Length: 127
Image (cartoon, helix red, strand yellow):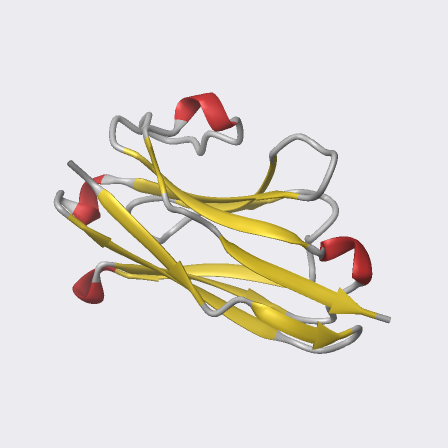
């Protein structure tokens, strides 16, 4: 079974930065596309960003494009989400997820495509 553990969440003022990490174990990390999702109170889980298993392609939601960057270090079995210029509306619990049967040539941006999920790490952005 694939296990994912997020870390790096916390509280920050608007305009600040945080870097989230997601450590994977129990599988073959280099075979998985890795996604980031978030869920705010009263809202459904939404796609944030994802990176192909090779690290050569990324995808972002319009709400975070230009502010967030996802990357991966396959040697460390870890994926990162660098969040800059944070806004109060970024407040949510952030989850990483693994697509163990990722399609060739494209990144999935729907939660149903992902097979394993971390427990989430909360991010709070104050004005």
